[in-house]
Length: 383
Ligand SMILES: Cc1cc2nc3c(=O)[nH]c(=O)nc-3n(C[C@H](O)[C@H](O)[C@H](O)COP(=O)(O)OP(=O)(O)OC[C@H]3O[C@@H](n4cnc5c(N)ncnc54)[C@H](O)[C@@H]3O)c2cc1C
Image (tube, rainbow, N blue to C red; front, side):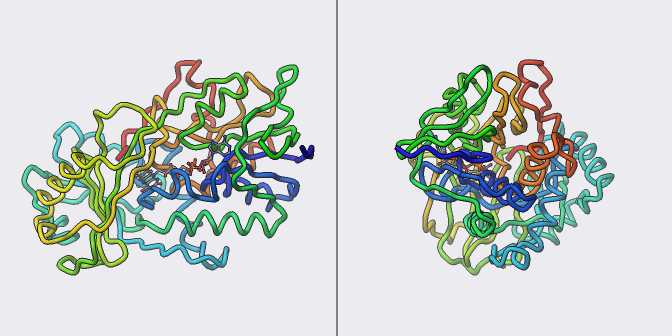
């Protein structure tokens, strides 16, 4: 068994673990070890639809997204890693009258923070996506800067950049114990040996409740199965369409690799680590897709997969040091919209760890203690 010492240990090499490791290293911290039980970027990050949007309902999420979009836009140049970014916009379609006031208020907040999102009426929608059936739709919102990219490539881009700065990433290396002495974290144990460090950051995605239990904590992050499918190459619809979302049902669809990627959350399904693809839910989703865009009647499904949203009680992440164990920080629980926030979370967590406070975006509303304090902050725009 080897015993080593690091300045910081990160548990999990998804987008968050890699982005935080990179930002810490860029700020000068060198002796960082990232433990990944599987391989880099193969957790929730690999299963994401890759969507990047600024249309959120809380100021913190909008600011995190806006900062991140600027990084995604120059990622290929800055990191030397192509991420296939396509900024074709997010088009939200609204059917439930109760959503209008909320979306208009969110839009006002987004616009105040510099997001070029706008209200769209039925004519605007027909222009943006002429293929959707507008029965029941009364309007929506659109932001042309929103889009999607390749999540695996982005994560590898961060991981390689971190490694070039001296970060060690140990794959196939699960953290099985977190050592706490006199109320302070002192390191972790893995099957290959122990490593001590004064700072341990949990970036363990959907497994965070279980990983936090290793330190005697109960961070409320629960896994919820979500499925996506991709069609065979399909040219009946143009590849220039925006990400289109029926907000009432949660159905989303966007062009991908010559075909289209689509999915819809089964909101009645309880939390579990079940990762199989539910064929019944696929049939329900395809039916909803064809109802919204009849041209898909002629498409064939090429592939489908399941992954886990990492959901917290208010659909917002848990960010920062915990009160109970000194030196133990968390960046997890992004509730299905985390990939896109990776760049901002990397910057903010590095500032919090090195400077004691995040300056890029004030993330204090998402502090771990908010659950015990009963100060939850619900995100409305969850897909
Ligand atoms: C179907 C689907 C669609 C989605 N679509 C989008 C989208 O369009 N846009 C978007 O922004 N987000 C989307 N998401 C959400 C997004 O995937 C997550 O919010 C984001 O990837 C979380 O990143 P992470 O680094 O926190 O978690 P992960 O990528 O899960 O990384 C955590 C890592 O921790 C590792 N780990 C766990 N336990 C241990 C341990 N004990 N020791 C060592 N390593 C451990 C895991 O193996 C994993 O690699 C989607 C998710 C799903 C499932």
